[in-house]
Image (tube, rainbow, N blue to C red):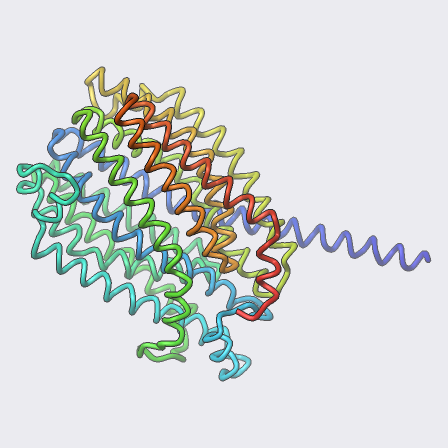
Length: 473
């Protein structure tokens, strides 16, 4: 009896030590990923400051081009939302719950080479798809830059003046695909620190070159585009070096398409792509509605979004941590730990969001003055910041739960929640625009994010995904 109690006590101590150690690793990963995203966001923040002082016309050029980039990323990033968790899952000890194509591939490999072959195959297949898609979009931008900008709602003068900027930024968009795939692989194999270091170097180079182009070479917004391209290349070189030291130290896979893996990855990515397409359609509608209220309202919303992206970058670390650790324990069929890790990051994310977003709102007007001296624009920007504070808290809940569901390949519920939430958002936004005020339109954005968080959170904590996990995928 005494020995049994002693054994139980020892097991509890061991589990507590393991749990605390893994929690520390998760927070460490979150810290590095947050630092990398923060450097990217601060770079965008400072670039927006530089661009803002070049005039509203320049802000509109950058904003319209950014809208095109978002549409591209709506598809491209969702592919990585599938491949990065799969890579993490392949680093688990048992490597269970994998898609059929990877199960077949695993069975064909030597025991010592399984992880390397699986990680390399997923990375190469993701890279092939992303690069083809990136080159297609880049080609369209090089040939039809003004027409693309006009599709985003840009006026003829903005489209004409911003054509070269659009050609440079969208014409090189395939670099984002390459960079994102490498970054996802490093995060998936547990080296978020290296991907973040590459991001910090990339963004630092971008910032220095942007500043020099505007103030010393007088290249204006075109200089910002060239700075972005050169900075991206610097980051790619850095990540290539680390991949050669880790996942690609031994070349065990070919560069040929593996259609079975491609099919499984794309099948899992389609619901996520649909999710982002639904959202981007409503985001485009929101931007169209805001344009009807005048340039000041439109520019204020863009400035507020840029301001709020700085604290939101901190939350990104929690999402990356979930994407790394949840699939890893899912690969070992440790379903209780899936919930434990998700809940830990959810609590940390909500607490961080409440503190940081409240601070930004309190000093919102002072921060807005960094962008403009127009008092009306400052006031409108501060009002938009309040909207983003409420959206941000709900967004943390949604993103942590959604990242966990993506990590366990439960992507259909994400598409369903997106369809329901975006449909309600679209209808309520149009009604608010036609019959109410600007801030009623803004309130529909809060409604959308809260509804989506509620649906995804309910599904995850209802444990319905566990029954699916115990069935062959």
